[in-house]
Image 1 (spheres, one colour):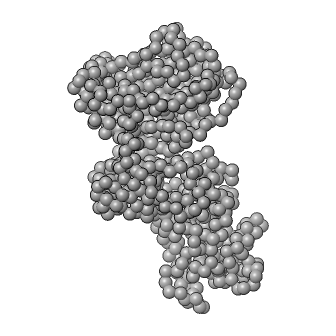
Image 2 (tube, rainbow, N blue to C red):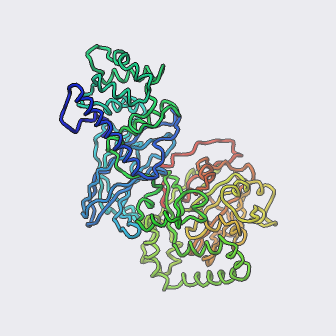
Length: 625
């Protein structure tokens, strides 16, 4: 699996020039195979970015072996970690697919450590269907001693994490930085070790030195061989090679080029060169056969029609501001796993929202009476969603948001709801959304299950997210409510509606936050001063309902209100220097990337309390998309 020696695939010819010719041919084939693999990976990112030594946490090796499903089909699996996703080949038509596909992933300190494996049934004409998924905490794997433990994991139904739809067999091993350095010489040796005996003859050693691309070292091959062969037995073993490389890298580095891909080294530091070659050696052996270059498993699952639309520039798939305004897909980052999640959005809604909010023509229509028409439609739609007839839309809605809507969290079963809006504002089971730090008033929590953007000031929000004309805190809150402390304060946007906001918010032609229906409440707190809580309606929203009245006392985590069908947005404005928003939320927002959070997750800490706490481990927090 990349830790052992590479063996010859032809009969042994250990004598004279025949040996050298065979060896050279084998090494050339090895490099050609590597380049072919890289070409097939399409838009794969670089093997490794510039990592500081303190940030390198190890290398994870994950092999997806096989699965047992409940029906026959052609299957493929996707492996996702953070903002990287890879997929296997498609299996034969069977209920027991076999892939044996492997990938090695670099782990970073404070980076994503929860890997997700998704299994899809195929539909070549359009997108393929997600059938089941599982998650692996790589930190737990790191604590395991063996590298050969095959685990069988349950595949969970995307709509109900309590329902099992199959099982999958994987092999997972995490190599810590010490082991990576230890195995480095073994991997280099395996590139040219013709007979797999763990030792290099002079001809093998010379071939390796040539592969390093260092002409000065190549001229000194004889001297280097003698220097390495400490015991004088005429061969260089693993320990001797490791010692030579370590000594030379400190004094006069031997390796100028990666011996597999040929890329020039030394652009970064020795650690990053070692990581690059570690991944390169294993990929060159053909072990890593997963296709890469994907952001999410949904992207990896799309059929050829979507790929054709991308090629023709009809669709695009990316993160950041464009993904919310003109791209065909909206990507957000899951705070718990630090992985990207594709937000499901109806295509007809995308087109209509773009027509209204992303063009001057749409703006003109809004200003000449169409706004009243949309309001009328919204009110009629709201009434329909309160009718008994609307209940038949519930199963279709659940199917549309499969993977993002977990019915096993609902307090009541589907049959309980007599209208769509009853279902839409459904209660959750007790404990489904634990509240962080209930005993501490100086820690604020997220106000909704939502996609969140956070900014230290309104100016930052205009720079990274809100592109509307004349947006201001005063315009949002109103002259009578807005104070100077709010004008320069922090801004947190909780987007509840997958159907609306990014397209509208990123519009440069209008301000949905100040032009849509909204209700402003001022909450007085002991640790954060006054906080403006703004509930904003959307095009398809019939009403905004509050469950608290003016003068009521509210506790952290109490229900404050809800939107009927369509959802929309809540904006919280804090007074200047009142809150230190958690760094991961600010960092994502600076990338114009929304963060998927749930009610009760930590938002930030009061600057007035004088306490500075580190962000808790999000992997222990519960979050459902």
